[in-house]
Image: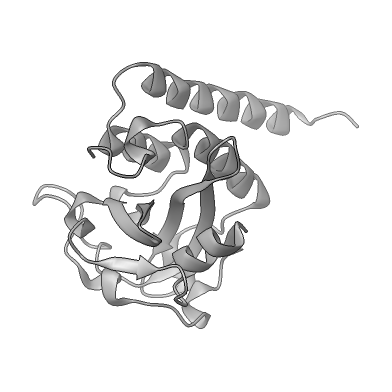
Length: 186
């Protein structure tokens, strides 16, 4: 089965994006820099990227930095990130508002004054949630990409299976980032 010109172009772009993430890994990777690159790769805003690190059996936000002190999500809880880590199962939902979820974090003000904050406090409409797993199989955390808006039609295009695949590949690279180790400086 051969690829169409569009599919071949998309595959080449995906490979280049993942290569850029690998380059960040080989330099001095910061959590913020990696997450901003994920936002660029998956065509979302900074406020639509969340990265959690597993610490003492619970998930803690490492990105966005404004949520680092927001508390923890126990793995036994019903939060999507907790279920993703506990089951090691990725999730893609383009009807996320219909899913019961913890919306407390959606109300936190993110970013700086000059950033576009029109969507930052909007509810999550669409989401991808992927476990960050070390090569040995140990779960290190979870990365989530969302699209926010007043409703699904106002939150942008639906995520695709290809988007989820790209996020899973990116999560493999993120798993090798030093800041994903429990107790590491963020």
